[in-house]
Length: 143
Image (cartoon, rainbow, N blue to C red; front, side, top):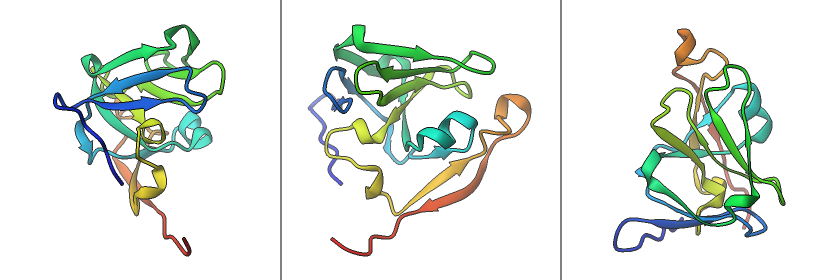
């Protein structure tokens, strides 16, 4: 996997159709990659990495972003209104961070990770639960 960074540590990202284009600085690079088993994450199936609130800049398509909130309404999930791809979310467990969909990052695929920790989103840390409950593995069998 190739995470291309500019001199200031930014990497480029976009939704599937390209309507939403952004750049991001990742707090821990790709080391923070994770999945979650909350009701929304189970359905969207994305691998996310962390960025600070000031470390995402929407370059194009802010008008194409749609926001979705559920349950406590704390987490803010953003999707492209044209292609439906989840781009990022403001985290409930740490509202000072965004989770960013690795599939949107230039040169990165969720299938680049052999193992991804899965967090307990059903029993959220804000509700007295949380932590890593397992690992999702990907083993390439051909090309």
